[in-house]
Image (cartoon, rainbow, N blue to C red; front, top):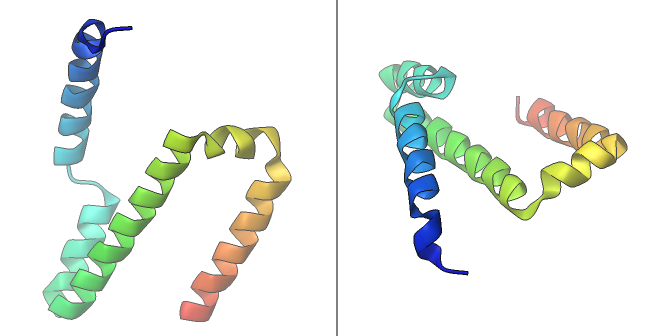
Length: 90
């Protein structure tokens, strides 16, 4: 298996991802609106958004999303635990 045969597909995925990353979304709005009031809080929100995105990317890469799709109970438990943590933070 040669990597050369995958380059066209990889480049097209990269190009689509680049366009998606450059377009502003809810994270961008949240970061900017928080940063207007406090730079430190804006950096904290940016770090949180980055960590969350990294977490979901790692889940997608490692196939944990398939596990969650096959066993919805795990996803529900995860939602409850994460929601509880966010409530505690608030």
